Length: 472
Image 1 (cartoon, rainbow, N blue to C red):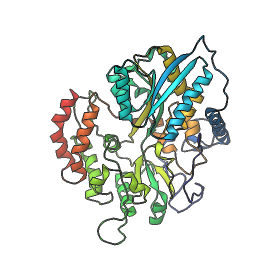
Image 2: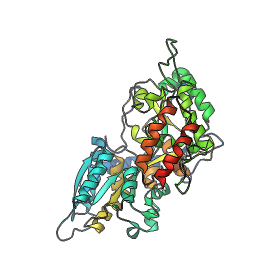
Image 3: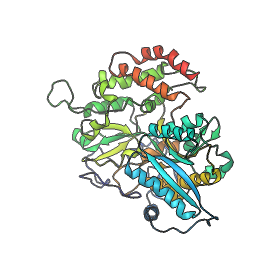
């Protein structure tokens, strides 16, 4: 598949067809919610363009994707005498991503005949980072890199990324989502350009919602109504006290997946100076205890021992009705109808954000050419289109995200992923210098909370001096 073409789930029905009285097209935007408008005189679906001109634009983008995947492209700049060879090292967790990122570089080569790019991929972001460090130590660092957020923070903190401020101006940066540019800075300097991004939202098994007569998640759902829906979606068919199907499943191994609940309850992980550990403060402790109670008190989520394994298999095997994830999971083929809904609200509507970047190694021998690759791939229609065809996220250039991410041909509410970006509610994790150590400490210790062996409040108090020692 290329571009925006997606395989529909088995049994797919057009989204305008009412499958149950609970499912309505307007379900995501209550009357009290202000909808952002992006143009005059157009029909809008939750604030996003679905007019005939919008469909034409999507079709134009699909045609552009045919170009990305191998059709000739006229050169955008004349080649110079000789050829400059650049080495690119990218994180790609599957073949689709690898082909898309390679296509982005190939597209650049066609437009710039004087540049040759050798691409090496690695499937694990942590072994990829080890490879960067090894190549750097050997004196043969990559020139350009496609990397994840945690890689960006680690490499920038070690001085291995080239500052890009002198290569871009404010007008250039205005094309990107502000959230993405903010996440591309370290200690005030711009060290990468964002290429893709994704906010977290909640996947829903619509067949199970219909079966139980439960309305899909809406933007005015709060924690109480969310819990009520999770209870109704939980099924103990044989009455043995252990659910055969749970209402909700989530992934506890990454702190990123904790934070929408903490933030929405008014809490945070660290203070603004990133010196104080705040999970013991009442708003954060209350949110994490709520997550633990979903397993241990309300029994709508599997036991805590499941949450640090591969909990998404519960959703894929129809043993759980809801699972939070990012837009990278929309293309997973499933044998049931599914959609995506927003997190329930509490005190605000903050949600976790992931950004994926193009960066330049600080020791490259060709900084001007390498930076030009990063600029072109993350900023142009062709470059962003190739990245987007990976299915791994949302274009970081706002114009392309609004025009092409929400696809009228799919049965999904993709706009749920865009709304936090438009509202400024999407947040990156606070990746501090010793983040890896802190996350391992937290996820191992909090297993006791998820298993009901300790409280979120008490554990945070025990951990606070240990975490704050790592922050100094």
